[in-house]
Amino acid sequence: MQIEQDDAAVINLDPEEARGFMRNHKEGTYTILDVRQPGEYEKARIPGAKLVPLPELVDRLGELDPQRPVIAY
Image 1: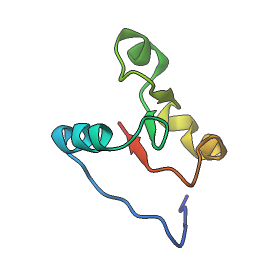
Image 2: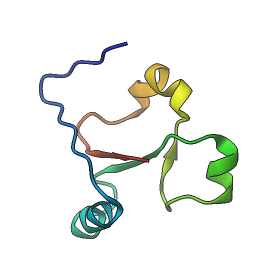
Image 3: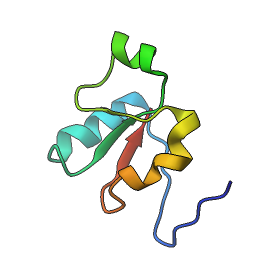
């Protein structure tokens, strides 16, 4: 399935760049999206991350705020 948005941009960040982004932006102005399975999420996660397992992502895109950047891992 192809998802199209006119103003969407995808940028790959390495872990240090993601940490820098999070340091330089106020919490709540972006979404941290964890696309792993629930068992993995329960073992360890980034504080504040929203769990949406990858197989469910397309059906649950409406849960994400399109006005906020998303950091997915």
